[in-house]
Image (cartoon, rainbow, N blue to C red; front, side, top):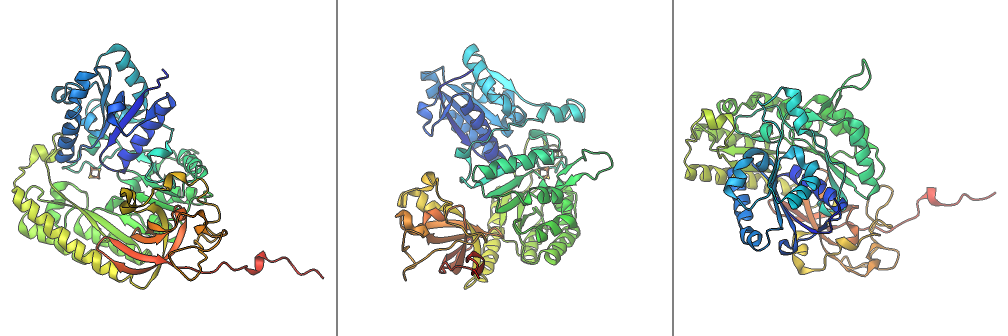
Amino acid sequence: MDHNGKLYIETVGCQMNVLDSELVVAALRQQGYELTDNPKEADTVLFNTCSVRELAEQKTYSSVGRFKRAKDHNPAKVFGVIGCMAQQEQERVFQRAPHVDLVVGTGQLADIPQLVDEVRRSRKRKLAVSLGRKEGNRDQVAGSFASYVPLRDPQMRPSPWQAYVRIMIGCDKFCTYCVVPNTRGPEQSRPPQDIAREVVSLAEQGVKEVTLLGQTVNSYQHAAQTHGAQPVGLSGLLELIHDTPGIQRIKFVTNYPKDMTTDLLEAVRDLPKVAHYLHVPLQAGCDDVLARMKRGYTTADYAEMMDRIRMIVPDCAVSSDFIVGFCGESEESFQKSMDSIRQYRFKNSFIFKYSPRRGTKAFDLYEDDIPEDVKKRRNNDLLDLQNEISEADNETFLGRAVEVLVEGPSKWTMKGHVPDVTQSLPGWHDGASQADGSAVVQLSGDSQSQSDSSDIGAVGLGTTQLVGRTKCDRIVVFDGNPRLAGTLANITIQDCTQTTLIGSIVTRQVQHSSHELLPILS
Ligand code: SF4
């Protein structure tokens, strides 16, 4: 099945899709494919898709449409639509985009090398999707989604030192607006030992930060392997992976409010590498709307959870999602969402206008009765309020020093203002971090340049704008040497915007500590 062709892949959607693309690319590269960012020179073009909002689907159809002429000119090119939209749309993809050869759902991604090969040889279309939620019993449907590609591909990661790790797939919550229980299937948790092994192997590849992924990640629960033992929940999993050598920070997304247990919050408090950041979508501040959404909790439940978070992890940043303009959302209901942003002062919120999705309960049961201009106005009102709160909260950091895990050059830098050096950092860890994890920079009276060959500035690349995140997931930009990427650095915050803290590196001289001295011989 070896093939020495070129692969082009476009990915939209959430972190889960980014991870899926990494696994698909790894599997295809093992067959001899080379990754290209130029679709014209590719002989296999894949679109990894999202189905959560109508807009995402429309965008995918228009992206796929762009390639129709390329297919006419070169019928041997293989075009594939993969992931959530493939599972949701199935045959409809072929009807709307007849030049597509391959439609592969989230449960069949592991089979992509073989499926591409079959299409190439047979010149026939292939559809590979999982069972619908009502097309078999739970085990049969779950089995049709259980797909795990153990390969990883560093080239597809957010950065060489950050990696996503899937700990569960699927969702059984069935919120009335959501397609995920159909596109990702029943909730299934991976064995904890498999996850721990994957984290060790990522750390051996230089990864410093892992983000554990699940649609409702804190619902993670794996049955005990030995008789009489307790099942392993997310807190147990965090304990299991916490001491992995090389890993400096652990995050997990996305949380479901009802499953935010006290033992999980205690693990966040007690395990020093776990980020003090929780993304826990509220979706609406009104109980009537939450009930129509079938979210499974009330505003009182959410308030109780927030109280526990504030009590157990007082410095924890919390972010949320909101849907505006859900069916039947009155102005009074919407104002309650505004009130909840004021009450909880989320670090940030992702705000979406409701769009009905075929295959969901809301699509069948409720009328999409909120006019588009009202949805837009509510979206803007919520966003403006959230931005105001985010900026005020960011101002409380002015003058403070924060510890940041450096991700690399900022987007501004990556757009070509200075050279991208992240690809040439084999020695980026050499001497750049201390045992206590803090970055040490020796300076010669000038905070913009480094002094001698023993310090980080010795690579001769000068400083550039870098970006990193605090333990509570706040974005920080500062000038520094690109070789700081992947290390922990102390930054003093001098300015801020709604979304970003702006600072400079706290510098200190390297000093010999007493335990490094030879004992006095007597
Ligand atoms: S919890 Fe609700 S919104 Fe989240 S993935 Fe499951 S069904 Fe969708």
